[in-house]
Length: 244
Image 1 (cartoon, rainbow, N blue to C red):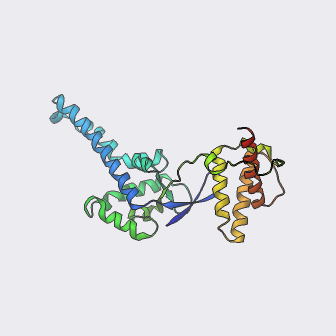
Image 2: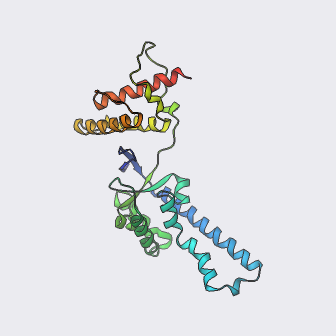
Image 3: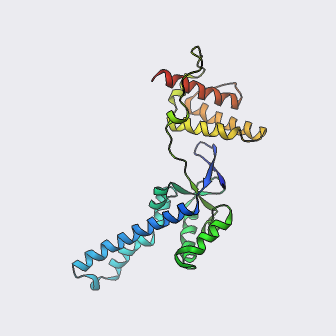
């Protein structure tokens, strides 16, 4: 399973699975259906009003422009997702863990038509994507991007909550309740990944995550990063369980 490391808004590195060929193909098909439906609706409107052969250049341009700019506008304003990608739970990201800029989306958009003009319905593009090892077709290689599969939105109750093991547990940081469920899930994911890294890497990621948490809930701690994360998770588990 190919993975890519993505930097979150809190400067926390998270590993994501590269989107599979199937997900990308289905997302593309969904986008094509949407664009065809858009065009067909306009066609039927003008055909019904007998204006189909009398449309001026400007009107035709305005009709075709949303289809022409569909992928660029979607990825730009939906943070790397078209409607098809959103349905399939996949997203365009930078390989260097940064957030794609307009120029990255623009490069993908410009090159994509050329890719899909070779090999019916983008077969060659999908073959290149499969062979690249990092889920990249030519447009991705030029833009420095790839497409990842987003993790499913799991409830904190499914990943973190458990009956407290010690009824005499002493909470260290009650401020932890200011963190949201999604933030706690993120911390849990980071902790799991830290345990799979080498000692120096684990300490680095743990310390960086600790800094983000301390800044977020306005606390200080002399604990090392790994111990701090374990304590934060235990405190949240205990406090959340006590309030249910």
